[in-house]
Length: 160
Length: 356
Image (cartoon, rainbow over all chains, first blue to last red; front, side, top):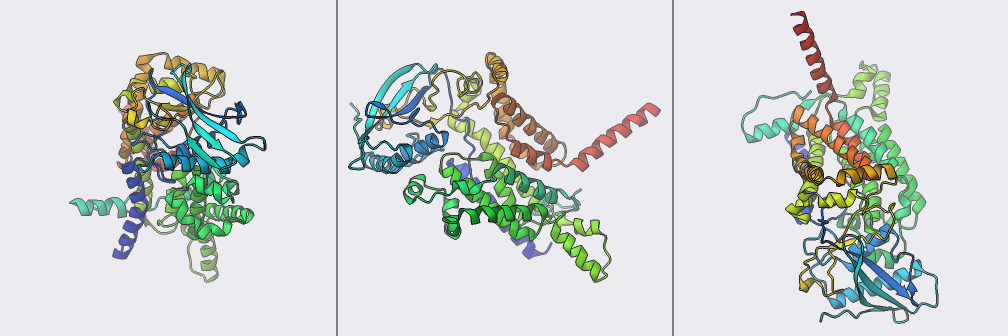
């Protein structure tokens, strides 16, 4: 092989290997590069499980709230974000109450038109239900409210 | 298969490892089969195009998809053009017509469309690797073997009375093996990081088998009765991480997609034996972390590839996640010529012993 062919080969190999190696090192998924985190989080006897609940006019806002698997994952990855700094899913250091409220305002104002055609809805409550490993409900907290008229989400949960 | 060059020292060894020459047809076969697999597993790409800029802003595509969204903006309002271009370059990649540009565009479109899907919630781990393999094939020597391009070359040479058989032309000259090695390294990285992630995100306690138990005993199945909350966190979340909701959610869990009740019972039977499930967890992590065994030619690579196929097949039976795309790639990476030579050697050895 000629020298320039070897240089080209090295360039191509690095062009594919470096982004993959960086993603593995960083531990964050960025398509098509991945640290392959599937089934990696530990699930034991004391692991807590959660579901998000959207309520409007006293009723569940959508069947099973976020019944669609894609929407469920997208909501967590791109909107709600993980609180685990090591998470391979959506977690960013710059998260704060105003940034969180801004993301949820954007999500609700955009997705309400796709999730329902009910024009009587003015407020949507977001809450989180906590379950044990056997899926027995342990607790429920209200995170906040989305006001469809002002297009704003207000976080009402406050640490005691 | 690979012409070994006598070499000593690190650089000469690397030189031999990546640039020794081969006459193998495997990259041509990989091009045909993997392009077909990517097309079969991702046939309707225009469904991932979303024209609502508000939705796109929320979905936050990856850096790779973001970089491509500029040149591919032409497709944003032309879903049919996107779909037809994809089908055309897929066919050209499979049959080897304008092979290299077709492979590059096919790989980019496949990665772009599945990347759009990832930003909408589903990260397709099978196609994330295979679309990279297609892009790699656009650059590496050996991938144009068994192509329409070479057939046209043979027709052209025959018209000019240059003597070369059709088979010789389809095979082409010997080529350096670095493309094949690059695909092996990518696959090794994938298995390695998969094993590493279990310890990285789950800790050493992942090896106790309880995580696998959760995925096999029906708890994560949408086909068994009851509510199935999917988001999880450990019981000891620091107070500083509870500011959003008072709990602190770490991740979503995955699911067992097996609808067959009989197979769910098999999974439950496996999960009911703590020693077995813990041993399976340890074996899985050790196997995956040893992914770089793939770089050692001969029996180590062959055994690892059969092991990977067995692993995916078992997960396919127990969880309906067969990763067929990976299994096909593993089958294509096995050096069948070498393997059959070994088997023939054994058989002739046995015969000699019998005669003696």
